Structure formats: structure tokens, C-alpha cells
Amino acid sequence: MTSPCEAVREIGYTQDMASPERIVVSVMASASTKKKIPLIVFLLCCVGLVAMWFTPAPAHVQTAGWHSFAIVLFFLAGCVLNVAPLSILSLTMMSLLGLTFTMPAGTLISFFGSGPVWLVLFAFFMAIGFRKTNLGARMAYWLIAHFGRSPLALAYVMAICDLILAPVIPNTNARGAGILFPINQSLVEALDEPKDPGKRSVSSFLTLATFHLNLIIGGLFLTSMATNPLVASMAASTFHITISWFQWFAYASVPTLLAAVVVPIVILAIHHPESQSADLSVVHKTAQDALKKMPKMAINEYLMITAFVLVVILWGTSSVTKLDNTLIALFGLTVLLILRVIDLDDVFAEKQGWNILLWLAPLIGVTDYLNETGVVGWIKKVLTASVAGIPAWLAIVVIVLLYLYVHYLLTSVLVHVQTFFIPFALILVSLGVPPIVATMLLGLLTCVSPGTTHYGTGTASIYFSTGYVSQKEWWKTGFIVSLVNLVIYAGVGTLWWKLLGLW
Image (cartoon, rainbow, N blue to C red; front, side, top):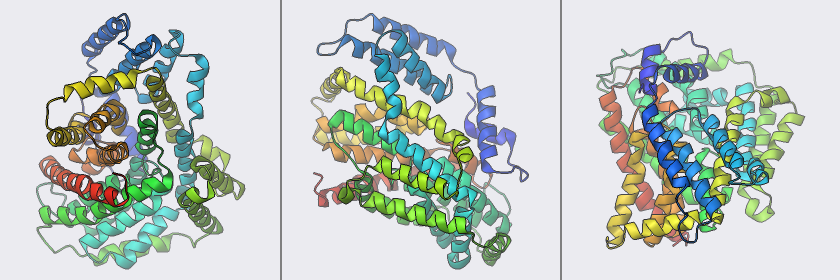
């Protein structure tokens, strides 16, 4: 099977491409046409699932729930084997659930009314304003022109840009590829260093640091990565716990921000530029020139800033005002539409957001249904029995390591979460880990798990395709960074959650 990064290398990165989005589309198109789907394996899985359908449901599990579980496993098999896009597989799953009378039609349709799903969508639509007004690029170039005095400072500037955008752009690909990647490329092109994957340079350091920081910051806010609301929803269904926007930020703040500070230092230590001949003054000039080419700030940019700040403040104070997070996002979108910062055509054209609706809504709804029909409880019993007799601390370590490093076999964080979150979280809880701690730990590890390989997520393929970093160096750096993240999240994170009274 052709990996995404191999598809990128076959296409090649050309400067005449209008935007990184075109690179993403080209990568996906190439991968989809060149990969060989292991149909035999998938068909064997389907045969097994049909047999499972006719097997009596376990004790305390409703027949409808057991049949739903079989169809959900069909969906997961399709995801893992890449037989079709996620949205198509999701709609196929819903169709099968309805046509087999496994789930009532009203219940299936109600999935699309899920609050967490529309929170992600409304945030996506608000993010249009950053692109349409050039506010994101203006902000980044201004910071670079004023603070980018060293390779490490440049990395932190890129992280600050990502952090500012993260609350209303719930996708690391959208931020990392759509906004940060073109800026990253303009900087490395200004440095004019030889594109030698075997040589460590400022350009290769900046490429690695920007990529890993993008993943880390994806865990900071409930709305900074689409998997975060999914994790929160599955935790609510499985453990009956609620995590608000502000609570997620409070729980994730210390370990995530610490990782954002430490990881660039670690990358610089293991991937220190071999030559200090790179003239960083050209970076300032490039940023200043880019700012000069931009028109003066228009009223729409000021309005975008005002709406953005207002929404973040309302999210942060929702525990006091009792306003729903999704309603706040809707309010922000409405303000931008009324003020004509964006228009309805922009919203209708946001294909990535509507695509998320098609796969995220069914996944959240199905998880609730599996819990209601006893399937989740049955999984918990089976998994608890599987670790019986093993020292709790050892089992916890093994489960956490497996959850993080299973992504070596995956190319999607969505598949990672949907396949492994509930089983692994149930095991951790059965071993004595508080549900909220298990949820936050696995949720944050999900965000950084794609950093281990050059195909673990869309941004990995794009940044790797630039040719500044060899595959060996990418994997070595990714593994070392994963260990650092693991220590910070599992160590400092659990201590922080202890101080917050979560366990």
C-alpha cells in the first residue's frame, strides 16, 4: 500500500502550487489511486462479522446492541484497511444500522443534532475569517519580524501563532498545512540553505519543530482538534463525566504548554544545525516584505479580532454564565455573518467542515447507543478479566505505551480514537485510574501520536515532502519526542491533575 508520504514524493513539491491545500488534495488523490486495497483481508473480516451477527449476544447485552457492535466493527475494519473515505464508511454504517432495523431511524437521524459535532463545525466556519482577512498570516509575519532572532525563537513564534489560532480552528491539518506551512516555507526559502536530508540545518530544525508543536497544541483546547470533542463525548457516554471547554483547557494547560516549551529545545539538542552560517536577518526581511505587500488592516480584520476574543472569553467563562459551548460558537459565527466578515457562500463552501459532520456525528451517536445496550459494559468485563493477575502499575504502563505507539500502524487519529480509546480507557479505569485522568491522558496522547512517523497524519506527509529531513532522522526525532511527551503527560500531567483534585 502506498503511504501518503510516498505519494507526496511521487508528486513532488513545486513552488507553483497555489496553496498547501492543493498539496493535500494531490496527496490524497495519488494515494487513493495507487494504493492496493487488501480486499481479501477485508472480505475475511466481513465473513467473521456476519458469523458474529448470528452468534447469540452475551449476557446483559441487548441483541440490537450486539448487532450494532458488529456493524461498528465493519466500519472500523474499513477504516483500518482504507477501503473508502471515512465519510462514505460512516454513511454506510448508518445505512446498515437502519436497513437491518438494528437501530431506529429516528435515533440515527438524531446523531446529526449532536452538540459537540456542531461545536466543531461552528468553530470551523468561524476560522474562515482568519483566512479570508489574512489575519493569521499577518499575525505570524509580524511576530517573526519582531521576535525571530534565533532558530529556537522562530520555533516558539510559530507555536504562538498556532496557539492563537487553535481555539477556533479544530484541525491540526487546517492550521499546520493551511496557515503555518506556507509561512514555514517562505522562511526556509529565505534562508536559502541546501536541501540536503542528510545535513542538519536551520531549515530542517524549523520544519521538525513546527510540525511537532502543531500536534502538541492540538491538545490544548477542546476545539483545537476534532478528536478532542469525540474523546469528551465518549467519556461522557462511558463514564458519565462532563468536560467543558474551560475544564479541558485547565486540565491540558500545564502539560501541553510545558511540552510546547520543552520539545523545541529537545529537537534542537538532537538535531542541532551543523552550520551556523544561515543568515537569520533574511528571515526578518522576508517577514517585513510580506507585511509591506499586505494591505493595511481593514475593518474586517478588527471585527474578526473582536469576535474571536469575545467567543474565547465566553468559552472561558461558560461555567459562570452557564452558556452552552456550542451556542457560543454559533453566536460567534452569527456575528461574523451579520458583520459580513464572512458570508453564507463561504460557509457552504467549507467542505472540510461538512465532511467532519458526516463522520463525527455517527461515531458519537453510535458510542452512546452501544453503552445504552450493554455493549460497553460487556467490553469492560472482558478487558478487566484479561489483565487479572498482572500488577496494576505494570498493566497501566503497558496500556499507555501500547495506546501511544499503536499509531505506527495507523495514518488517522480518528481511527486511533474510535478503535482504541474506549477499550484502553476501560482497562485503565478497571486498574484504578480515575476516569477523568484516563480520559485526559489518552486524549492528549492521541494528539501527539502521529509525531512518530512521516505518514501518521496529513501534516506529517506535507512537511516531510519538503525534503529537508531524512526518513531516518524524522523517525529518530519522532521517537525521542514521543518519549518526552510521554514523560510530560503521564508524569507532570498526572501530578497537575492531582493538584486539581481529579484523583
